[in-house]
Image (cartoon, rainbow, N blue to C red; front, side):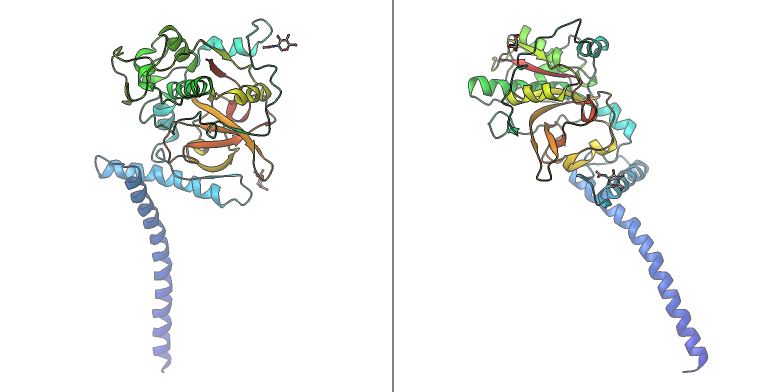
Length: 343
Ligand SMILES: *[C@@H]1O[C@H](CO)[C@@H](O)[C@H](O)[C@H]1NC(C)=O
Ligand SMILES: *[C@@H]1O[C@H](CO)[C@@H](O)[C@H](O)[C@H]1NC(C)=O
């Protein structure tokens, strides 16, 4: 070979190498695009046009990067995954899905225990045991999905009523969130938000609630219907003493409990598995139901939360979240405001 041939070969080889490198970069971008397509198919997302799709792709990409950066850490106790919310900005997610609205004076009252003594019937419970899973006791219906409606407050309340009904009567019934969405209008604002205690008050005044089958979920507020038969009743409800995970433990050892939580942070909305101890504040924006507690093989204590974002989120719709943390408010504020209905 002449030196010119060698030189040409060298040029060809080096251009191939740099070509491969730029293809590598392109490949990465197309991999994200492919993940976006797969995600769109998985969550049945359809965009109105290409510019909408481009906008959503950019947001999806940021969320995907957030998820993958977290999962690369080696010492994490929980993993993340893209969820049905991953093409929304944090602000959009919060505005569309966070449906907990706490009356202004409620946190003041429940945290100033001395001047208003709330009755807490589980205060002397001592046999809480190491773990509890109300699913195994048959007191938890399958995970539901609130869809595009900020009505977490009704799902949280219904899950607690389903729980106490099964515990008291031995029958597990799936009850109607739509009835609360349509009819519990004292303070509560339908898809724009509400609070579980007002939902319990409605059920007490209405002398019961009907089943999911009789009054199925429709994802938006409709006219309140009264053409159903009552399936479950409650006689009252109580508030768990605030900022005390020990009191919450006593209550959850006896029944599923409705809790308010900080649920709008990027890690929470894209939680996949493990024991969550991610970034979150204590401002209460979402409502879920605590249906158990336990300790992992690694010795980390957790609460078991039932959410209403379908079965694709978290551990088949559930979250394990760190229990007995340093802050009295609990992880993500979950010990600040909790209620349970009475049989
Ligand atoms: C993981 O390691 C980082 C860096 O060493 C540390 O800051 C962080 O607190 C650790 N996280 C856990 C959950 O142990
Ligand atoms: C708990 O025990 C204390 C002391 O015996 C008693 O005064 C209180 O009434 C008990 N509370 C309940 C809810 O039974």
